Length: 305
Image 1 (cartoon, one colour):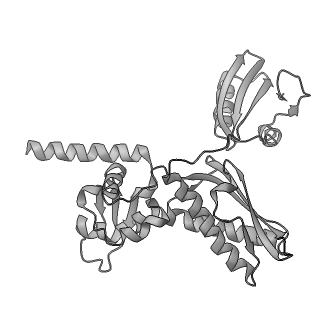
Image 2 (tube, one colour; image 1 turned 180 degrees about the horizontal axis):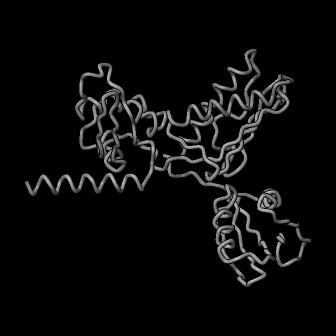
Image 3 (tube, rainbow, N blue to C red; image 1 turned 180 degrees about the vertical axis):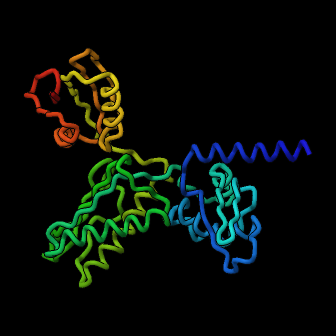
């Protein structure tokens, strides 16, 4: 009985650790065909494995996973309901299992601040851009990447080009923390069904960038920028703390360090994800304050009053 209690305690502790780790790729919900039948851990795992492999195995290794049966030791948590079963897999055990068959795993979940632009290809460029972004969100859960304003900046721009033979082409530019060198191709001949062509190409592009995380050789460009902001106001201490908390939650802000804290004057060193600080003026305006960009050589780039 004591042994059983210890095992149950370890299982519960592992579940708590998982909740704090929060890699959603390893949490999979499956739905049995017959809701009256309670699935065992093994049966539920068999239903979940194809989804897991799609999320964590690079494209070139997926063919090898077709014959893998898994083992119940890969499952960290099992929770059954009348209509579904929730499984949480152990990332460490999954990686070891795959390596035993010579299959790499995408160890780090890609998290991107993704934006997609179509420029100069059709009269409906904006609608097409929205369509491609919707596709990216649809693919995210299925293929194991996460789109969030706090992720690495990834900007994809589709635009027209002409090759040396005068043929109309579509060119993809990659900006942000990534380089175009990561892609197999950066140009395609324009086809009749442009929407379908871009959707298929976008899927390949996102998977190529995702797969690069498994190689261990992905070098990110440093696109961050540091700015100094001076705030002159008579805010109460409570209001100051609330403003700082809100500022650190701003999507562009990576970190905020107080440099000077006085009753009427405070300075902060802010590290941003990239070199775009155009958000500063409108952000402080939303809090009833005026942010003014200072001239070069000033002690701060922005003065807020």
